[in-house]
Length: 135
Image (cartoon, rainbow, N blue to C red):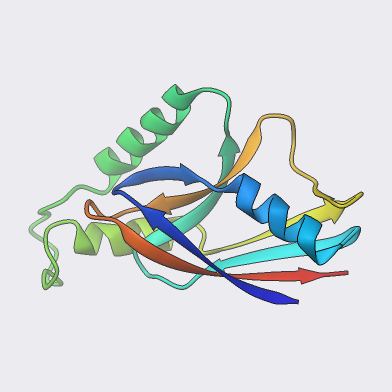
């Protein structure tokens, strides 16, 4: 089964949407199988990460912003603003596709794990995801 999901982000950062994926799994009635997520954008990515301490999210975002800085003089792709090329690089360094086992009708995530869309642009917007649920 394939579903399409829109995640609207207010801007750069990690945006958890675990509950929306769990609801899709329940609605599909998948008991044992695989949930595959794919983000259809080149300046956003997907991440499974700790969802207990918001400081983790801030630290991860600050670290990646330090690693991939805006206004690097090597960038020639500048059409959409100073965060555009860094957004593409961040997406290339992270994941645009995730696979999560489904066990007992639930995502087989660890106790402190959540599923995030990582928005790499300042403005944010509506990000499209394709969700495949299979047994």
